[in-house]
Image (cartoon, rainbow, N blue to C red):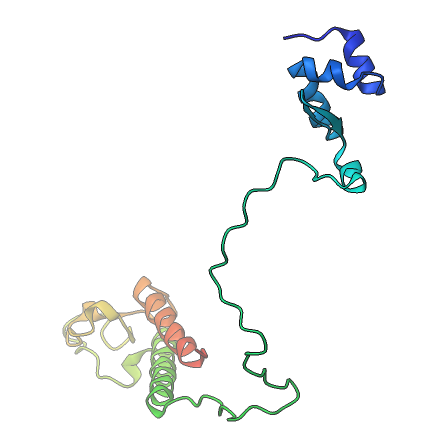
Amino acid sequence: MSLPDDQLRRLLDGEIDAGELAGDRVMASIADRVFGVKVDPAVRPVKPRDAAAMGQESGAPAAAQPEMLVEIIPGGGAPLPALDAPPAAVIPPMETPNAVKRRRKGLILIGMLGLAAALVNVFLGMGQFIPTCDPSVHITCGESLKLNWLDAYRTAEHIAWGPVGVWGIPDMVATGASALLMLFGFRKR
């Protein structure tokens, strides 16, 4: 439905009367949305702000009030506690159980020992402390002092020993895992 431009202009200027609005549903809808004027063919249109001054109800008649589901008892309320009053019981700060403290210390100790062992193996060689293979087995026995972690169970063979100062993947893993264990021990929960 299209409105003639003249009718719409008159509505927006406020020059249209109630009879014209009551006869045209589209114009009545526009008046309701733009100005808040409720138009009923039997009733003269009134703006909501003017309805209160005239003693009329604004808008549609109110539906019956639903019954309240909460019973209000006058004067029957529990007294609220004072905000300035100290709390009845002071909650002591939580202490870390001894088992957790021991576990943390254990992680720190294992991490430090593992890190020290991994670094000593790379830079000095565990061959300084553990007997290496016999020189009659291989030429490098007694010269290669770094223990290869993957072959640590074969210390009597030349394959278990490597040159000092060379990082291998097992050395990196041992160093990183030991450092992580130590850091987890220092971490607070």
